[in-house]
Figure 1 (tube, one colour):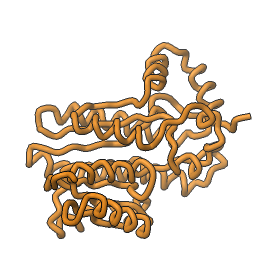
Figure 2 (cartoon, helix red, strand yellow):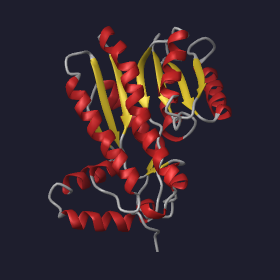
Figure 3 (cartoon, helix red, strand yellow):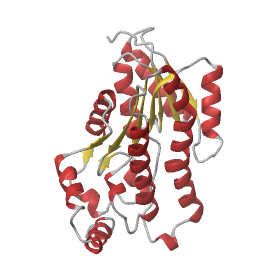
Figure 4 (spheres, one colour):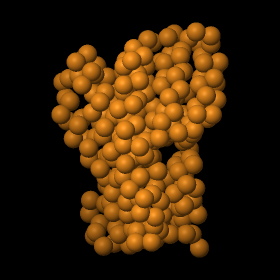
Length: 266
């Protein structure tokens, strides 16, 4: 049983996949957690599990249902926690989703919702909670980027572009915050076994037909990187090699390979 740390982690997209695994890691280390996602039932189920496994009175799991496609959701989350006297030491911007297909044929509202969740909500939550961290002289932010953010992604154009934003925003912010006591880490996993692929519609793609990392492994590596204050973590030796190869590969070739990976496996 971990000793209670007295620190609180806010995790978005906490109802499944990486978010759920992050919550388990924080709770196992004695941190209180604020679980944010749309599905209240899933959050309450997870909160009960975390408190039970940690032991009576060891940690507190707060359930805060919110739909991050609503531009007002970040302010609601921040104001609710302030009113409750909950100070966020660790912010994990994990919520996000993708879509697959030709951009001109995809649902416009869903593409715009993706930008809202993957970019706007992440940016707004960071802006809301960061000043207090700086004032305290300590705090950690973990943003979930992706190897997708290192190149354009035909047939997942919006998703790849949103992850490029997350990767670059996180690195720039980490530089700005040097010597403040606050760190920013961006986790860049490749294909990972979560609900993401099925929701995005690319679970049958060649990308996911190849090697897929487990959610637990990706979350554990990202969690450790955040706690060490690392600026970026790319999961897996294969992904790290591919990221380096992008530096020298012709751009047209990169586009062609990515497009092929994002289409259905034969």
